[in-house]
Image 1 (cartoon, rainbow, N blue to C red):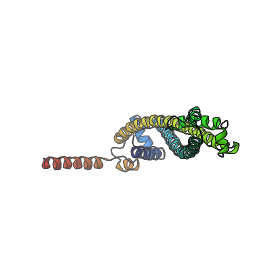
Image 2: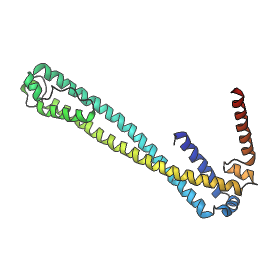
Image 3: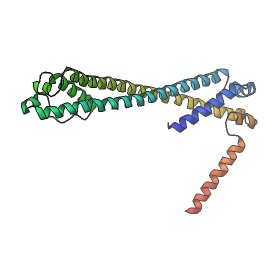
Image 4: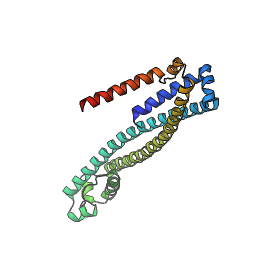
Length: 230
């Protein structure tokens, strides 16, 4: 269900349910038409569940966006540290040493492979004298490993956030489905119960007989106009 339809459903359901529960006359009129207090309470509960599910899904989306920003920043930092070490190693080490460091392969594209490759490179660099002489001492290597660890942490958070979005989206979809079904039933029953009370229908945000006639006339006019162009 598109976002605008979700917003519209919550708006219509909130208006119909809250105004019904606040008006004893409406409750009395709809009760004989399949909407006793228990059915209205069911609607209230479904609305609360849908509102909670919508809020949770929005929060999950916001967390995913935050986690994505942090992950991308950590990825850039780790990739930069990895590239700098690769550049220095290729300039100062012989081919055999480069192969032992894994530099014969292309730079990893995805963050998961980059983490493994960079971590191995920073761990193995400590035993290469040429790189130590080029400034890759324990402190600099520790900084490189820290950038890889930050990427690992950020990637883990991103995976958790992505799962949360999938989970909350499924819960939201289910909650909106049941609310939509209930509201469709209540709208049909209320239109019968309040057939002679257009003001009460308006109060619930539901179309009156006059609204239905106007809508039907507009549809007929559109069909006539379309036919005239053919």
